[in-house]
Figure (spheres, rainbow, N blue to C red):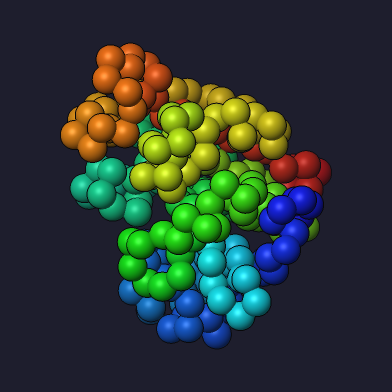
Length: 211
């Protein structure tokens, strides 16, 4: 687990007992969520400030056929890699969205919890657990590096994933994201599409799952 500022928070895996007690936005219905927890062992890493839920990193079993029915506006967006989806063992995971500053089951985020290393701490915790649990690989969709775009999407840039041992296997300009970035003025006017809306497929093979 990360040290530093994020060490003041307690992190743990979501369990079936958490369903109905912590925010589950973007996780789908309670029945589907409970089924994923039973299948994989969890569905998110949770962070607490005392007894208060303040962040989570959601994940699911990797599915190369995953497709979002509404592009960027559906949680399945995070697991969709189209023709770039790699062939990975069945016991692989996909990182979905980071909800840093999430105090309740809404889209509001408390800025006091952002910029304090919580996102990286959640990622570290997930990777440590995945190795110990024998998973073979982890995939992630990296966001553009602009802080406003990262916060809007709830993701991390490719540089963070590279620093954690991921390989960037493919990258592309997300045209839907580009439209949203411009509509919401999330980047300075004139920012090149390659910088403002390029997302990447990142993959980390886990030694514990390949031995």
